[in-house]
Image 1 (cartoon, rainbow, N blue to C red):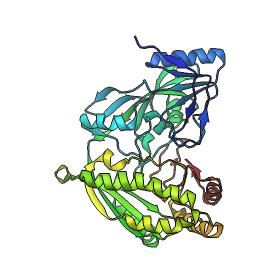
Image 2: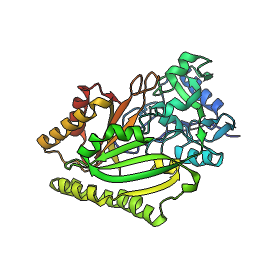
Image 3: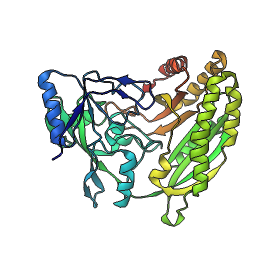
Image 4: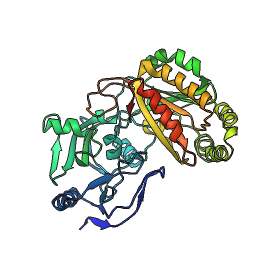
Length: 393
């Protein structure tokens, strides 16, 4: 019989900027074990935090008492092929879930740009992809199984405990520990990805038309330059299936995006004055490409270069003013920033703690290499977006 395992331990997040030394780490293998662990903690008056894969850059998973890992609560527990609804345990990583869904003829409606997170970590923290007509991942949730702070195992949905459901869709761990989700999936679909370099001004001038024309759109702006890389994704028929050749995938996504980019960032950390020149070269090294593949393979990329990130949602109309003010600050401050700025878009939703609550947004994500001091850059960015109704993710 599986039993919940406990141990003392040390924990560090993926970026390495958050750490904890909890008194105890629990790894329940069943939902009843999870309820048991939380119930005992409630009686003892202990502080409890759950953790997924550690891909949040904030201290949301830092625990000094009892930390619960969901790594043993994995897998799909039921499938309704007629409705496309799937029940999945909270510790299931997106990297494992997406291929499993594909074998069932299903796919997530939208995804973020990495798949390292657990499904619960991604949804509970408001993860979103991009697409002006598409809300974040939590919008696909139809029911939630949650173990609340008193150790009760509860299912909630719009028709059963609707207030708990409304609050727990993006709950940040405040209401209990998510054990399982029911998610509305789509029939499996292909995406055509088109990527091309452009100038920042051109990308912004044609933005509304592009957002109207494409299911998904994002772009990456290279600081110290006027260069961007634009990526659009659209549904494609099965007959058009044409994934990247393996050699091109290795060159673009492994060698350039990870191995070479790590070396570039190390050079920028060692000799900051070279960063503007490095960014000019990096922006021009990215060429246009087009391919058609399974949706989750197009959405998600592997990222091994470690960084810290700050992302804010702003009204779409505020995007140009925010980027303009960021460029002025970079020029004025003398900061050197080797990582591109990521810009994405999402539709409004009705989820209480979502960044998209009642408002469609442009999302601006800034990054700094983990060996460089991010604090001046992040503070300046946060001051800028605060003047434009920014919502922190």
